Image 1 (cartoon, helix red, strand yellow):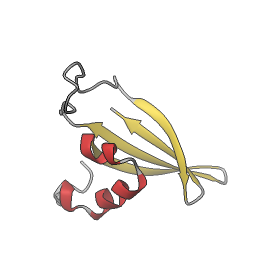
Image 2 (cartoon, one colour):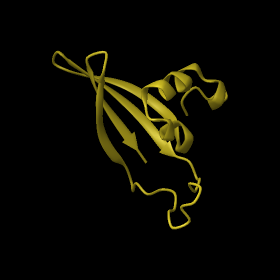
Image 3 (cartoon, rainbow, N blue to C red):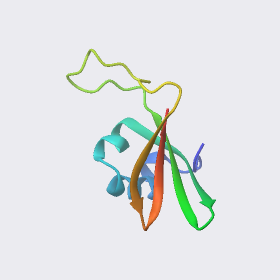
Image 4 (cartoon, rainbow, N blue to C red):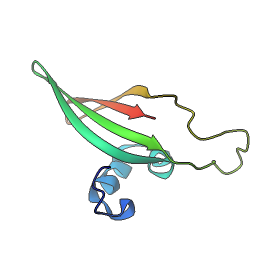
Length: 88
């Protein structure tokens, strides 16, 4: 697990992520890993998010783990690096 010696709510990287991604991501997902990939001159940032076992308020028809087994989402570039969200 990513930075397992620090409580997720106290993790400075998780706090930073809350400014980068929509607020719902921090509420419904845990950041589990961050990896950087180099493809030639291109650098790609991979953020791994795991869905929390929560049901959104007022949405009783929804259930957790809607992404099976993993969805990859191309996100906006961070500091000119392509960003891919891995959601499971």
